[in-house]
Amino acid sequence: MTIQRPKGTQDILPGNIEKWHFIENTIRKICKEYGFQEIRTPIFEQTDLFQRGVGETTDIVNKEMYTFQDKGNRSMTLRPEGTASVCRAYVENKMHGLPQPIKLYYIGSMFRYENTQAGRFRQFNQFGVEVFGAEDPIADAEVIGFVWDLFKRLGLDDLEVHINSVGCSSCREKYKLELQRYLRPQNDKLCHDCKSRFERNPMRILDCKNPYCQEIINNTPTIDQYLCNECKNHFVKLQDYLEAIGVTYKIDPKMVRGLDYYQKTAFEVLAKGIGAQSAICGGGRYDGLVEQLGGQYTPGIGFALGLERVLTVLENQNINLTEDKKKLFAIISLGEKAQKEALVIASELRQNGVQVFLDLLGKSLKTQLKIANRLEADYALIIGDEEIDKDIVIVRNMKDSNQSEISRKDIITDIQKKN
Ligand code: HAM
Image (tube, rainbow, N blue to C red; front, side, top):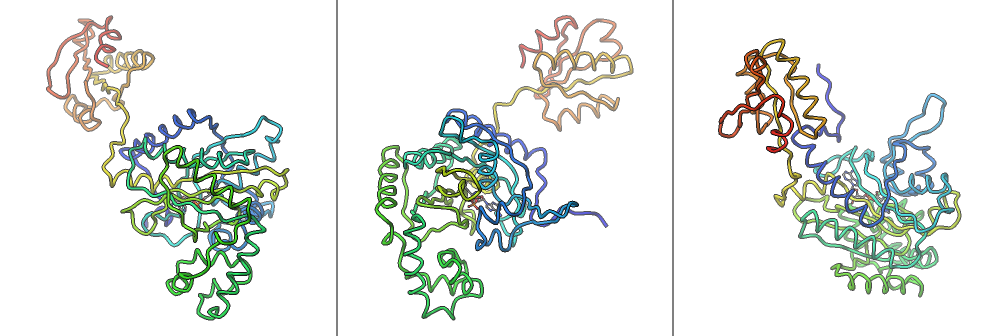
């Protein structure tokens, strides 16, 4: 029996990987412009990091982590998200000692044991940014403006930015009591998970996808009425900044997000036409997280977007995802002597920035031309014994099959002219 890839994972093959490169290159370029620097953290971490960071009452920690004992009997977990790891790295590498704010970004795989469906994978890729050391809502506006700018540059439209304030611990405490008071008479109608959320973290109930729970939460009181003055001012200022930079947004007072570390700002970007998994990006402020993970108090804000989902939206909108392609030259050699000469020519051309495909199998002219066609080569450079004797190379235009001869000694300059 053949072995298949694990459920919820994907092979990204040649032909498709170019689209990934295009998105990743666009991301890296815009990160540079905004002053974000790349960070790479381990793919697995101590389980405790996510339990403490993401929160014990979240679905991610409760149900979705790939956790295993290593050979030293330590509990390890494949990272389900990037923020906790980046905060750990911030503390461990004493980045609070550097001039703030620290602006970091990452691109990489995350792992969640989810029920798979279109747009929901068990291994998926996120691009995320984290900004440390900036308390003012201007940082929130810059981060949301960055996402807005990135999506615009990728050519995406029909997106909605939803924002909310989930308050700080003191306003949330008041809101939780109010939620419990409202939900208590209907507690027995809540799903099994929400019954346990009711005591431990009632705000999680707002995120439940169960249709019965949805109906109950339709009319719940919303957090905006319970925000303290500081959180309220922060949210009002954020809206003012977003308007100033031309970001269109909707306020969604029921958005709580699936992770427990958020305080004040929470936001999501939703795309139309990609089914139930319409959130292509989510983020918010996590001012208490660095301290919770053993560092000194440091405000933080960031977001992550799901690259698979972004790619689906781009493909649905028929957006061109290729970079300006360099010409491809296929070197076709006939005979042993010519094969060696082809190896030398390929090396010379590559050192001069030319993209070259070199036949390695010594096949017939017809087969090598077929391969060149399949690779969409622009030109074939043909060499046999006769060409070696005459010190020339035949250049064949693969589009119109026109052929000409160039002198061996001028090959670099002549080919560069066609490139
Ligand atoms: P999140 O909302 O859990 O936030 O994930 C961010 C994005 O990752 C989602 O909007 C979605 O596009 C994508 N995503 C999540 N789960 C899956 C999945 N199973 N399959 C495909 N795509 C998925 C976070 O992870 C936070 N760390 C974001 C953040 C950074 N907040 C502050 N800083």
